[in-house]
Image (cartoon, rainbow, N blue to C red):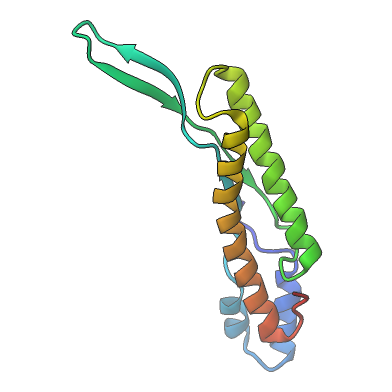
Length: 141
């Protein structure tokens, strides 16, 4: 998604109303990028060529988690996004497990890794949202 946080329009209005110029208000709102949840590479087959040299085939899967409808300066909305990330990680790891039943890591390890990696992006998005909210005095965290 390439839009802005739904609340960003209100943030822009608040910044402009508080005396900030429209250009300052626009620069204060960070670009909203979806959180990408990526399953770790799943090893699913060891292949050997006619000379006995082997290599491992791997696959991975990603899904974008949209949060344009959330205000990440609010604790409840942060928890909602964390839940979406967890659900997305579970979905892609279970799908990989169905496609590659004997793949490694296991689905539970896949979910833990995918969730942990995506939560780093969530934390960055939350920091940006709180920074903007603090600039206008509306942070809930």
